[in-house]
Image 1 (cartoon, rainbow, N blue to C red):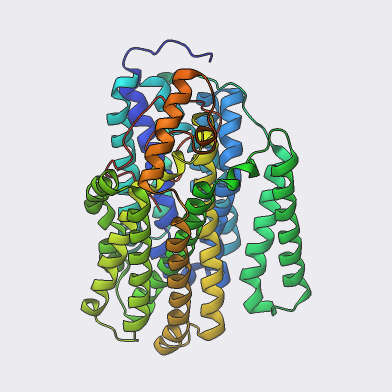
Image 2 (cartoon, rainbow, N blue to C red):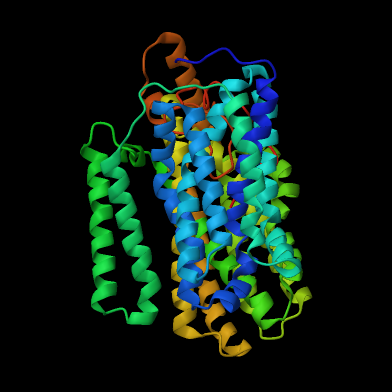
Length: 521
């Protein structure tokens, strides 16, 4: 790998720069949720427009994430990081200045493009700058900052919306981005990755397919599920995704090799991740509006009341990490998903047009504990399911599927809400919200079942031993080829390890999987 010697002080600067950049991108996933009622009141538009203010960001982020990482590996990680940061900062200003809902949606999509280029490179730049012996601490700080962004997102969004205006949730990124741009140029060393994959065909197929399906799901309640527009979008989207799968099977260097899904562990944890985010994102999207539009909480009050859910992982993650070390990751993740499903079902049972916060609090706490139990060990299950050389691809795929799950969750659950209820009154809102929450609970419960396909602790130990034997002897074993090794950087943020980072952001790091604060949504 072509990598210059680290500059004096570059490790500390790299940690600051990459952590702040990660904070900005992670914050924008949930910061907008508590501002949705104010955006709707100011810019107009219906529920489908609010869906796109969330999905435009998550979709572009998801489908371009691995492509952005490959661009950095090929053309220079610092160069592309600066470019992605500039795009994200400019798009944030455009979102704040948006004169209408369509302009806001377009700016959010461009934000997602910038984040997709910027975020995969934060860990690879950090890895290049920090000595191997200190990477565990550096990754822990980086992950904790990103976790803080997730936990504080609804509260920050609510506070800025109430005391200033919703535009400030986007203006916040501008001074941070302008400060980071010269620092990144001057304080980060350039580095490149070997064998970077630029799968343009795969990126276009995935982008078109996901856009078609999400567009069809969002327009279905408005235009009718049998309308030509909706049917065309759903059919074309499905066909393009089918083409993406075919491309992943037969292409020599695809963005996402489909052979990875032959591994039950990899398939199980990725299915669980997609279903977890489907249920969680869709629920938060609707519940934040319920708290303000039906119960009458201010944006700040709504953000504070969401903290037992979004902030609980900061407290429970160390416990989850210790549990996964003791009994293995699979039962901890399965228990977390089961608790998250229970929390959503609890919401569905207690919500009324005048439900007290005391009635909602147990559901918020249970959901928060479930989220924490999922995030802490999930990344290690992903990393341990593949070979070290494929850990970058595996991590990128897992994070992309999480974002896809979030976009699908908003679209699916909002469609159910629209079919059963509406904004006309508090009762009508609850009439639509409750069945949507049941669907979210069911999706997360299916995720708990899916993760049981991951290997047990005993199987993990056996495969690890066989893989270590393979490394020492130089002879590949069947289990080693299938499972890889448990070594790998612990990453719980949405861009965990970039594609093409080789072993430097995976096997070299050896950071623990249960490190607190390495969480995202």
